[in-house]
Image (cartoon, rainbow, N blue to C red):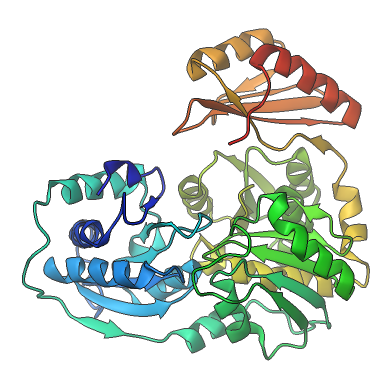
Length: 458
């Protein structure tokens, strides 16, 4: 087991070179030991408090890793509830529905077929990241000398499809109109989950790449526009109202409108703001600090409370919970909901997109037109020798602007702003710029590139 597989938010590595069944056993053992140590009286009246949920995605090695993970948990004395082949948000649902002390989804999310990993959640499906337990789990796992022990815990198998379907569809409004939608499952878990949840609804779904056998027609990363080519073509060919591409474990998504134009996650957030704030006035909405200013403006316009947050799903979920926000989003395609245990869900987001579209007879591109009022660069990567010193130099160079350091450096002027933040794993500075006009954006980027060099592909 390569220690580098322990990342900021999850565990991921190449199978079997960096992560194999022995490593999975150790991670299962250490995860169960850590999560059960946090109970502190919660087990009173909770029949499944000493249990953990385990689930997996469709990768060819996910089943064997799941079995090894489970045996490691059993060897620590923990009971396991195996909910099978599901999307990651169903794991979050299962932890809350069954009342376990946490759970693990075996998945490598958007990475290629040679990768695998684990997403670990604690009580209430709170994320377990580097600052909330993943370092402890790593320490325990890397100290284990062997993977042989008597299995004192039990294993039960549950099929939660019916309960999960009821949970997701409870968010659906009663006045749903017939909508034509194209869904690209990216040969991931959406290909299994979408038919199970939505087959009875009065909507027309065209599914592409629904086969989920561990192979991929295109990489299961919906943020890369090259992976959306087929979706755009089918949307135009079918005359669909909207297209959606999911990632491998179906917790993230990207939307395209009826013209095949990508709807960035911040614009989609701004699109949903009126819907949520009309139902829940004066509520807080949390958003990724890289988001367009249109998000903040729409939240204020409709009487909500905007809450900027640093990049990372662990930060987003904590802030959503702490502020009791009605919903939130990041630019990676996660959408979080208060009434969904403060966690993200691709399927609940699909439901809300259907809800908002059903409120108007206008096409999506027309509804979005007023929101596409600024010019954004998207995230650009720059190789720098010293990330900290480069950010300090940027702060000095643009010292006349409004400065904050919530995540990296953000500097705002009247007509434009930028955020530069360091990569956690590479010698990169990540830059996002927004301006009021395309020409101003071009001028600002040229000036910044003179200072930082040319962006690189990563």
